[in-house]
Image 1 (cartoon, rainbow, N blue to C red):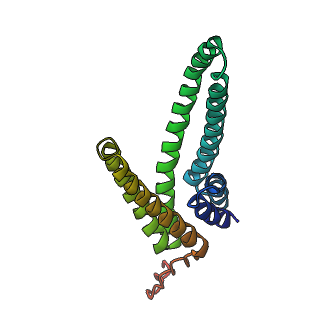
Image 2 (cartoon, rainbow, N blue to C red):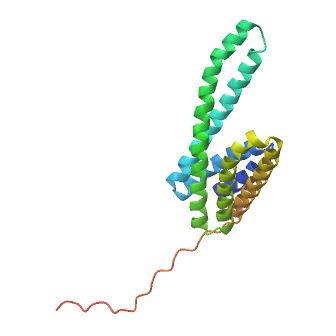
Length: 194
């Protein structure tokens, strides 16, 4: 059950407009699969994902309410700016949780790929890492290239989309590895003591 939730979650997380549902399903999937397979890190990743999701929704709600409150009188703007500090703190905390959740996802995906011997999931992890590296490298280019950098970010989106779809398909099609055969010994037992 957890594997199915996780696979569907990664596919939905790659698709715009339904990705928020996918992110929640990924977190629930990691937690569920962690309970099924008795994997502590997978459970922790799921819990952290759920907490990150709740924090991000709360931060967005606070920021939205502050934005609409600031559209009033100058006094309302002052109150909104004072509340904005709390919203900024919530956004920073949510951001930290999301970054940790993302790192743990990569580790858990790699573990999953090894447990289930899934080459698609390993390729997805590599593509995710390349996407992150390229995104970090592209940030300074936005200031210098302007609209040209937009094309680069579209390319990053496509790379992330492919990684998400591959991860989802790899998870959904992964088969449980057969346990390693026990070695057969041909040695005779020791003779009984005299």
